[in-house]
Image (cartoon, rainbow, N blue to C red; front, side, top):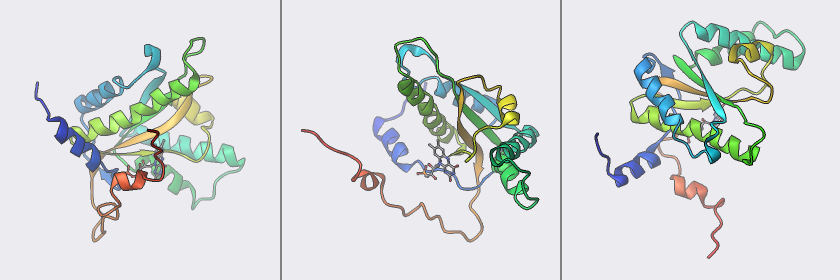
Length: 200
Ligand SMILES: Cc1cc2nc3c(=O)[nH]c(=O)nc-3n(C[C@H](O)[C@H](O)[C@H](O)COP(=O)(O)O)c2cc1C
């Protein structure tokens, strides 16, 4: 097995950046399997695995997009305007492949639900890091509305389960002439300085 210098891995962590535009090719099935395997390595109190995943790709994105439109319509209680529909549906086509993260809490254990959700959220970051390490670009996305009936059916959402959004995966494409606003962004540590308290 190849080894990696811890210092290199640390630099990899600092350099991580979400992708802005994602296009084909999608990660191969073998890479997707590895990304999902990485999700299973997260800190998980009690080993409950309070999470599961739904992989959307290819034509499946059409059903996903329609389900997002349905969710918006059910939340608003009205049919969306023709101009708005494609904008919402386009979220499903923003990448060649998506992995939705479903928080699936396990009741009746001593592990509080907050900890279970924390474990589920870790899977998103683990999958992004794994994807980047394996050559895929990634960004975590979500939706402003609660899942409607179509999305619940598509994701097979059970009582108590919640979508934590999805990881868009693919190949990064820089928009023609665009400057990467994130390239020169404030270093990570500087961004954290107001949110870290040290007790000595
Ligand atoms: C649960 C979750 C949902 C997110 N949803 C969105 C989203 O819908 N749209 C968006 O622009 N960024 C979303 N983000 C943030 C991006 O994934 C990304 O972290 C952010 O653009 C900062 O870029 P960076 O990861 O390169 O620092 C979400 C992050 C998390 C953790």
